[in-house]
Image (cartoon, rainbow, N blue to C red; front, side, top):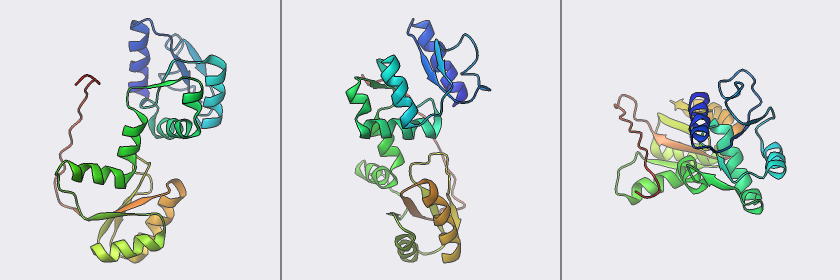
Length: 199
């Protein structure tokens, strides 16, 4: 996301739009001198981002260029009413789209609504729920942490013991896991599509 973020800052500069960057890491391309108009070397969390918003009063915010941390913070700012309170518009990927892709159950429902097949799966908010789901689907299963696009805490479980280990890891960073039918050996085809709001 450092590359995509730095490219976004360059694009804003080309359009004469002032950019404000919050990034605690001084060793990134994004924080290079002369790239962003203003840089705040602060932790990317709801508390510090709110303070920057209060001080600077930006018109908009890009969440999609800061990795999982920025996505989570944008969701929190939205839920806390900070964005609405200060009139900060979310630019690019909208909060409802972030939620729809990160909440595994919402994502599954969206895919089913457009008539596409999905592997047998269900969401769990506790290890006990996950055990029941895995038993219903049948081992092996794929365990994926919600709200963690990088796959943090995800993996395959061949039995209940491995499932519990994965759940223990996933629930440290996520309130929800999805238990999927194992599709090991299948080929994956991935598309990345960009479009604007007019399309």
